[in-house]
Length: 376
Image (cartoon, rainbow, N blue to C red; front, side, top):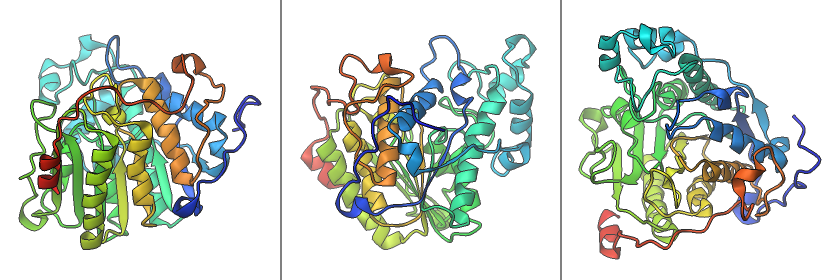
């Protein structure tokens, strides 16, 4: 896949720890941007195609192993999800007239999680990328794997939730557990990573850490006192935050907590969910992170040199999602791209400044120093 002649020249390597090259395997299904949740729905798979276009026009694809995911089979998906739910998803069509109203209620599809044309192939592509990313790490064929179509952290065993139908993250972690004793899952989406936490709530082989907005906010879970149960007690960690958190506060908290987690838990592999709805100005989010501030989480984890899977997630101001995931792809390979965007297939989306980075908003950070210190 060649970059267009108008693409930027290859950016210079970042300095210091970041300059150490990693073998990065990047999963992308070219049809992913064609799926459509419906008129007015905030979840737009098109954002993944926009991010990919930036990756290519920056020339980053030359530094990656590009893989097209195999679609996850029904059997693959049943490793976590219930048989009847998978059968429903596989047979669902975009024609609402043929849907059983009882199934609609039972499996929680409808307004937030509509049954749209191509729903199951969309789920298969998302999950196939994350399972494929896990297999690459299991075989030690890559140091970092990336699947921006993954990260759908709200899906439950037998129901859809929060725009998510198949929990690709849980499926990927189950694959990783075949070869790794301990998996660390970290979630920086503005919403609590409830589906992943719930799936591994009673095991110590997976530790889940979620940084999220808490209080009168979907999905309503993720209190600081929710720590796991049985063998999993103290292996779920929740970091509840308030509106307006900025780069400096987030970075301080993230690095303090994750440093301790890495020392104590010593994971064999890390899975990072990079939901971009924690960025400033997100249509559904309420945090105030810049693209650089968001990517600092990935940069910090990368410095540990532990095998890592990097996934997408939420993100509803799609021009900023594309910016963020392109920049984080660059961070994964150890490159600092130019702030001036190369001409690309969706150039008009990025006006009027046509830059990679975004400015935080002038909003109050409601996370007081005292609250942040208490969380630590």
